[in-house]
Image (tube, rainbow, N blue to C red; front, side, top):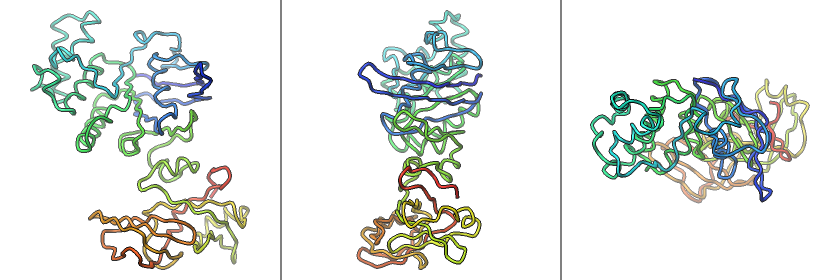
Length: 361
């Protein structure tokens, strides 16, 4: 196992576009770190530079203390799993698993032993004589993972490996990847635009946008303390609500005010916000699950109620803008109703409206 360190990595292409700028990050030995962000944010480019498939314009990449930018892919001791399974269709599962070892010159008996042992770990032992066209999507993905794992790499790179699977298989494969990482303990770097994958599988998440690193933290840190508006908006489903207003001090208590909405903040937060009072320029971020259809903060007119069974997603129009509320599946509101809204003051996020940066509160 080995750590991976990125030091002031920069990548520009010939057309002048910049895929990555001043990217610095350390992935701990044995960690499962996910690059999370929208298409074009630089996450796959970073993974490809880690693998040696792209060359940085400037900066360094280290595996442990060893610089690898000048090493070809074959000398980096990495394994990569792509969005496409890229299995050899004319080979059986056993032959696909053994192929990397065959290329390394490993003896036939040893190849067979390792492939059989790995197949048992990945629950493929009953499928060793099948060809890829006779496998389900989840089984094919396990074979692709096994072909990467059998080389016993120092670093395991996964580029959106679940994106071609249906919803049920994705859920199953997420659980299998979590268990696999626990068993083998290898450093894994995973790329996805799917926040559910990132939140459920990662030791830490690196959120990226437009070639820049926005925030690095555990899934709960990213969710509970987003560093800026981009992170707050990107992580969470339904997405966070944003309302622009101001902060005023009232009898020593900080109060967030917007059109038709008022939230008195707890004493501890009020003390920290005393120096940030302003009539405007403050953006409140409110997650749908931190709103309830109860009196306390304002009211809105219901536009849509999406009954999910276990919960209701209620969209309401308010003087401050459109608000989405996630409530227990017992809501009696209907389209056209005027409903009360209460914001949990402990869970209100505050950002500078101009910069999008989190306010120190």
